[in-house]
Image 1 (cartoon, rainbow, N blue to C red):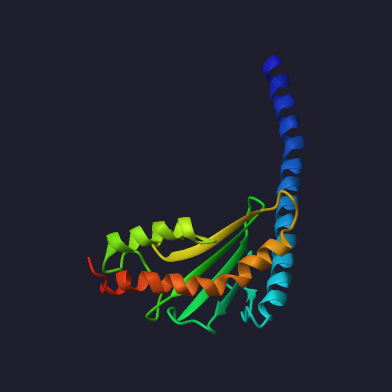
Image 2 (image 1 turned 60 degrees about the horizontal axis):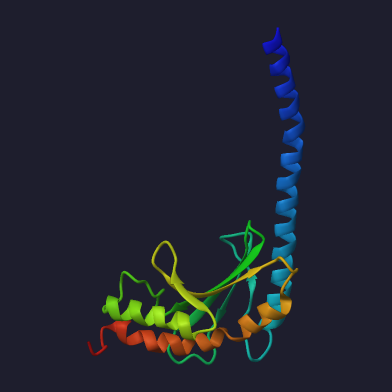
Length: 183
């Protein structure tokens, strides 16, 4: 009989917890939707500036991502693909994927791997954005933002305005991609 009472109390507690857990998930999703919508509005506006010139749109692949392409003014990359995401963790991630020779720069396809990786690591100490590779090996420059102090509109604008500067670093990586570096 005591077991039955314990089981009923446990079931009642679980029933009470489920709606609140569902409400927390809905609130988190709603907050993420709001962040994504604010990010899309900001990037659409900033992208129209003459010093940026990126046409941003909501990503077809990820409902919480905003994407755009920068082509103008580049000397080294074919173009820079920009992906800004509102994450589950209440952060915003901006990643810039340089395209070179009709594709992503992939660490598994560079000809001088040690020189490429050494240069990539040096860029992390001298560049405004950090450099890395995603799970498929595609190289990107990135900047993360936390939402602890609210939506960081001015800081996001500064990062977006500096995206074109990443082209010079693609120029530093090109000899290692092409295999023309002096070893």
